[in-house]
Figure 1 (cartoon, rainbow, N blue to C red):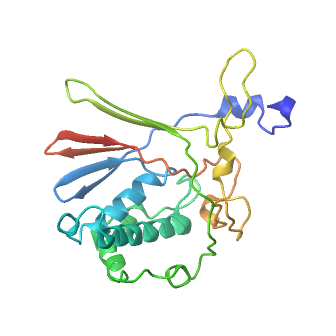
Figure 2 (cartoon, helix red, strand yellow):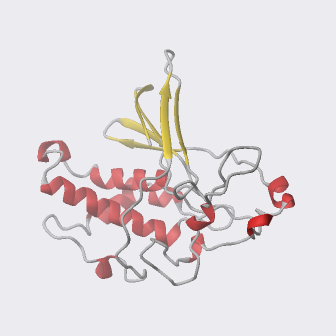
Length: 229
């Protein structure tokens, strides 16, 4: 890293520690949904969107019907708006997890969704600067495993961009990531790469960047029925 002008030192690497956090748990139509907490945004977004969609009978509308797709999109737009407003490293910012994943809060969001009209972005998030973003790239890796005893693992990991920083550690054979790109780089600046300049995910020393990882396990009466991510 030093040879390529990087800022990370040996002391930074020595001080880094993995953190084990309590998973998020929610329920959707009798199923328990278990996913990751911040600084990954995926668990909150998943539970928030499912809580909104639980108010609708999507099965009767058809999986790929225009009505179903409209409701799914509107639910996810509201969840992503809350991502920009509130989500970041919980060691640095207060993330209202209980509120965002509650059924009560979901009802307030349902009340803002019109069945036959998309809410304009300006109307939806007047406090957030929005722009059209580039196409989401095909990156990040996920695998799901379950054994004969029902033990399940949903594992998502990433280097961020394609091949990460594209720098291979000499003699070790692995790529360095470019995860710093997941931070909001400049306060108030939103761009076509998807950076949203809201405060919770701005760069700070020792701070973990917000990610979109969403490894999830779904169970019914204590038995795993789905692993995804």
